[in-house]
Image 1 (cartoon, rainbow, N blue to C red):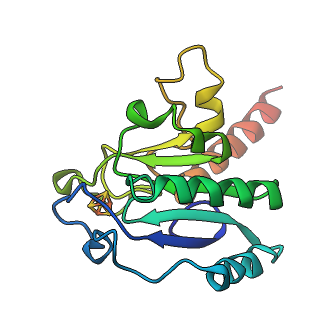
Image 2: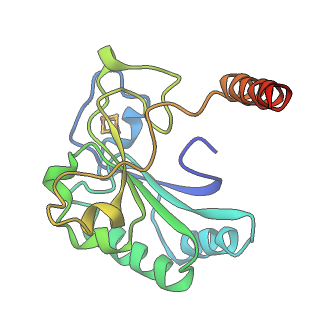
Image 3: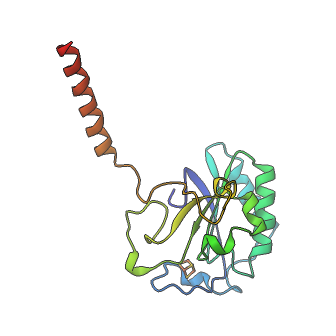
Length: 183
Ligand code: SF4
């Protein structure tokens, strides 16, 4: 629930060279770390994706776009997209969109959260990201633009505040009553 819209399967891959200060997952930096991603692991993921209430898969880490991971992540993203065309694929990377938007894997992705984690910009209330500099990017909308380097965002920095929305609804309701009395 913390790694994208809905209830998701998350695959954490090993390998990251960004070395962000304050990274919450440094155990994933070593590309030789982790568990072997074999057919059993793949089946486990497919068994979860088969469930109707699972919205999709998120690739996180580590960095799924680390040079040691790119080819395998692309292959698996393609397989997931072909098998589950109605489910979404998210990917977290320390790279910037401007550096990666031409990567072949993008054709299979729905959302990319880009950029290194910057501790001085950390904010626990941000939506789907750890620091303010990162961007939650709608991949296909971005790629459809004349200049895809300028990303289209999937969402704002923060989730809508339900209390504030209730206030707005109450205000609108009061105005409607007032209008009716005056007419
Ligand atoms: S990109 Fe992510 S996994 Fe890699 S060091 Fe930065 S916060 Fe950690």
